[in-house]
Structures are given as structure tokens and as C-alpha cells.
Image 1 (cartoon, one colour):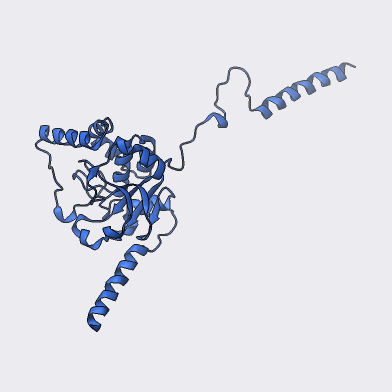
Image 2: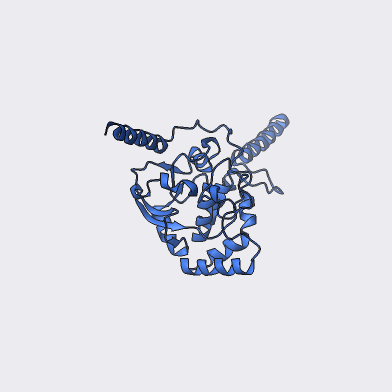
Length: 269
């Protein structure tokens, strides 16, 4: 009888321990968070992101191509239209908080091209819903560090997102690059000021006022031959990172084919 009672108490204790283990409770006095209580960083942006890439940079170091391989950005063909805000050198207005509703509903895209080769880009074929320009900012990518206006694709997209009020998505993109935090550090004051503006006119006023009060900073790109809305020539030194293999740039291939066809036609004439 005594043996049976002791055995019964032991069995009850084991049952309680089993219930605690099953419920994930470590008992009184513990405060370890459960796995379900830990918030994970969002793996996909809340905003639809896209890019037209015209093959004017090193594809292995292109930040836009890297974002695409992470599944954070969609690459567009020349024939694809985009109804959202498009960061493009042909824009006539500055991106601002006024564009936030367009970015939320239809997304944000960038035209990856070099200022020195604008004539090679068929802007007339790009169906942009709302082409926009970026205000004065300083690049932090390894190649153009410290140069004004020579932003990489990820810097351009992130700047526009912060200005429009989508800071979390901007941090998600910049977090994919070792130097991403440097872009925020270099432009912290300006980005904060731009994000508080209600429209493009206010942003231009803030930009001009800041440049006037900081007369020592260069107001235009240092090297005009490399000036670029989203310069990508070697902007990312971490290209080989186990991501899916690079695909051929169909936009670039089509341009080469079009040029060859035109040359053949001229020769026939």
C-alpha cells in the first residue's frame, strides 16, 4: 500500500511536468518569451517595387538586380507599363508625401540609367504613371560615397519611400547591404526635413535653403561623366552571396538587336 501511494504521487508529479513541457511553460519565476511572441522582421515589402534596367552597369554589383534576386523588386520590360510613382530623370516634379497614396496603391519604380547615356534610353516607350525626381541627397554606396546625386537604385528607392512615409520598407531594402545604414547617417537631417514636407514645392524650398546655408557642399555631381539617378557601377561589393544566378537583361539585349537592325537597314539602303 505504501509503495503504491508513493508511486502514485510520483506519477502525478510526472504528469504535471509533462503538462508544463507540452504548454511550453517553464514554471514559476521564468520570463522567457515564447516563439509565437517574437515578432519577425517583415520579409516582403508592403509596397510594390519595380525597376527598368538598361544594362548600363556591372550586373553583378547592381543593387537593383540584387533586390530582384531577393524577391523584393520586379524587373520590368520596356513594353511593361507602371502606374505608380517612377523615379526618372525625365520627371518634372519632386517626389513628396503628396505621392504617398499613389505609392501605396500602385507602387514605386526606378529607371536605372546613366546621365551620360540618356540618349540610349527610350523614355518615350516607358509608360510611367507618375514620373518624379529626387531632391538633393548624398550617395553612400562604395563607389560614389560622399558624392551628391549619384545614388544607387536601392538608395533612390529608399529615399523616396522615407519621403513618402514608408520608412519601414526603406529600412528593409537598405538592410540587405552592409553599407545601407551609412546612407541614412549621411542624409539623416535632410531626409527628416523632406519627409515633413507636404508637397514637392516645399521639398525644393527645403533643399535650396539647405544648400544656401551649406555653401561648401557641391550642388551638382562631382563627375558629370558618371552622374546618374541610380549609379550602379560597382556600388555593391557583396555580389556573390548565394542568391539565385543572374538572368540576362532582356531590355539591354533588345536595344542591341534594334541597333543592329537599324544598321543593317541603313546598309541595305
